[in-house]
Length: 341
Image 1 (cartoon, rainbow, N blue to C red):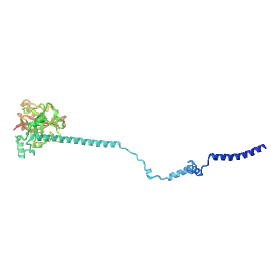
Image 2 (image 1 turned 90 degrees about the vertical axis):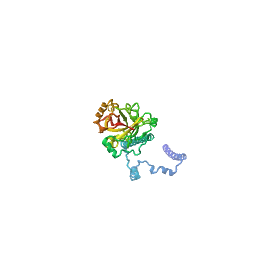
Image 3 (image 1 turned 180 degrees about the horizontal axis):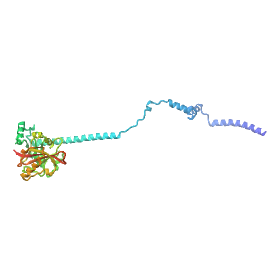
Image 4 (image 1 turned 120 degrees about the vertical axis):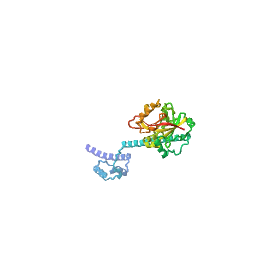
């Protein structure tokens, strides 16, 4: 009986307690709007592992059409570093070579202009056309081997030249050619290799007489050195004398000094080593003079023996050249210095 009462009481208590608790929870936790609950429980927010979701996602992925550019293949960038480096080197080399050549030709122009200006100030009576002997004179010269040109073709202002450079000893001139230069002499054979007449650094240098030579001394050899320039300045035209036809057109030069003038009758050309043995300055006597001529005559490209005169001073004109079989080749012209008025 007591048990039944407890059951009845518990049942009544539970119903009463439940209503009471519901009312209490309702006060503390107000019920959220239904619409909010629906948003939180939409299908999109359900876990992806929900049954069937994987198939749906796969179907959507396969049906998706991405923009066309998205499917462009990735292109690997192949860098041709060696080729680029080679091109840069070649272009750089060409630019450097162009600059170098430009500098060389600029120096040539500057040097030629400087010597042309010097000639204009120091030389008078210089023929405008640099006239050469006519056909009749050339024919007569060929028969006699002695040019009939016996007058000084130009006049030199020695005072002007001395004021510019006290080392001046002469002026070398060849009609119809570029050779129209001062000749200097100093105590060594090195300075004027790379210095101009103004004594400033100059790749063309200046024509200069050997330090051991003397002008106007018989039984001797006046040696004059000059560069073989690529623009034919200085002694650059001497290579033309390898052709005897060029000699026929230019058989003589003139060498003028403060004490007198000479016509230089060229009699031979050859190529020798640049050693002192091949460039004697004094012969001592006529026998030594003739012996020297005999020793070199067999090496001449052309030889005019009728012009050789041991009673006259010899002139040797030397320039560098390239030739097989020589370690330090020199192109050498020989002539005799005939005094003229």
